[in-house]
Amino acid sequence: VLELRPEEPQSYRDLGLALAQNKEYQEAVDVMYEIITQKWDSRFGEIEIFAIEEINNTIGKAKREGKKIDISKIDKRLLFDMPVDIRIVLNWDTDNSDMDLWVTDPNGEKCYYKNMQTKLGGMISEDYTGGYGPEEFMIKKAKKGKYIIQTDYYGSREQTLIGPTTIYLDIYTHYGTPQETKKTITLRLTKDEDEVDVGEIVF
Image (cartoon, rainbow, N blue to C red; front, side):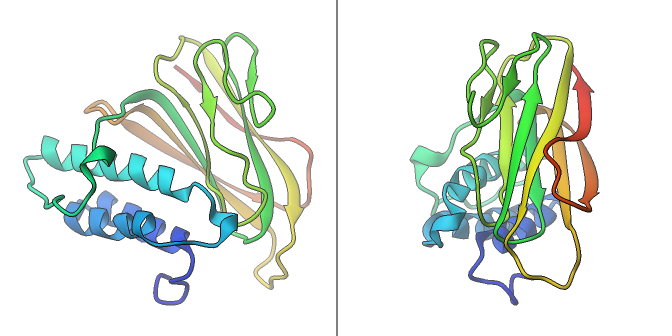
């Protein structure tokens, strides 16, 4: 995919995350750092933030496994631990799509593009109206209870033969710590829908 679409930062991110999952940490960090050093089309705004989070998470995993990796070329101002209790990342597979991530916390407060910070400390990333995303919700110290996850799908401007948009939701608990867990939900959206219930997490 990277060879086919080197002009899209998601190609580097997907490869980097796959390498990290395969415990090829040095290669993962090197690939994802390309996201930070290159310039991208405006529809991929702030993709660098995701790369920084995932680079630091990869470095942390390597350290915990006793594997040394060379991080000398990375700006030291970008290197720091960033553990959070919950991290939810919404990805999708069609370009020029407008998808919103909504997360409702145990207090009933919805975190989304019109309410980007909640009273409990939840935060949502900037709203992507083009590209492939991603969008994410994070909360550093999560209150116990149920977090309801939804998407709001406004449709795609992409003319494609591959069919409907598929979303990939990665749900992490204790992200960036030795207790990290990950669950992925895949859902195909067959039509434009105002609200799609994707899942929930009980923390």
